[in-house]
Length: 493
Image 1 (cartoon, helix red, strand yellow):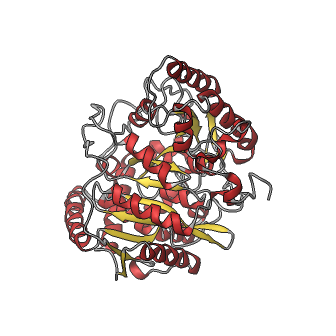
Image 2 (cartoon, helix red, strand yellow):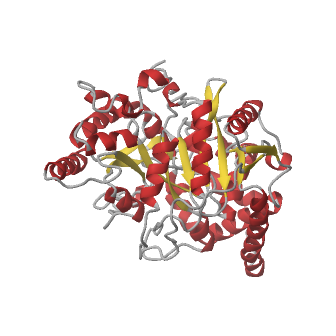
Image 3 (cartoon, one colour):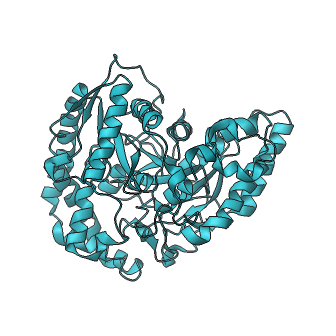
């Protein structure tokens, strides 16, 4: 199925007799059609529920379909429109939600048997904000057990999620269920989270787009019980959307980061989603091989294609030697995270199911926990590295680089052995560094090479998601959208 055959945008939304194909349309086009009465929210929902029924048995991305409540919410939206009420910017748009994130009245399982009956008492902040914009949750999505079982989306409760492009490679993780659902047409939007690539990696492995926002940009609540997690888990993990297009990604971001505070997350700052433009042309640093550790030719080709697109769009594009203090950043990231894991590991290990412990234990073997004095030094070091990044970004407000420096890999490589773990974490190095620093990044395909999408990310200054999205839109416009190529599993191609 080609991109043209999918007829995204408003070309299909609202066409007579096209209701069963509404799952192909962009989120923004669907919402406009619902607001204007060209289609009903119920028609949009039925198209997506049918798509879930058709492809989810093969892809295994949606873990808890919410057909009945989704139909009720769609009907309520239609009733509101019939009564003359104005509907929100995402009216009637279906979205999926990672198993980490609460939907009121639905178990938030984290993919673990231990939490299969852990029913959410209220919507998580991101779910509530998307609902307030008119979007409708259609199901929870799969993830590695407790987010800790690896980079491949495989959970104790729900098993493996397949990559819609090719079942022989992973869809990525940990928001792999959302990426696979979005890429295969089960929903236009997904809500995941990212602490080192967990939105960005599955987005580009599945040929979609994803946003890791600035730390403190989008309100979130990542507690499992009443207590909050320790420092690294508080500061590294951010909620972020996935979509098939940059335009839809922007619409989801604006809903998630909208005006007003949420008392459940006092860290979140209600900064406007669009700030003053930069002097033209903005400078873009290009870094195909962060740290000089190696990059696959296909990935470099994707970065080159994206760089050419930005140059054609008028950006001032130039190669940079590296980002500030990458090796030191990765060391600090690993030691903070592994130190925090070590304290609860004897208990957490028992919750991960068969072989679910291997990924973290391979990490602990490479990066040993530290004592209190060193932990405190590392906390201070984070601010020092952030300061150097801020200076770097004064010169280069945008950075173009890979999400993953290898092509999509086999499922479970990161947990297979020490070499597999090293390969995967090395390939993810810039995702880890940007999560540590807290800056925003938009991930998107840079083209299809070797039959699989290869992704890039546009990294920006704090709270300048708007600049990242603007640049990503120019790349998408020139390189092209690739999600229609997801055929091996879903379409039998």
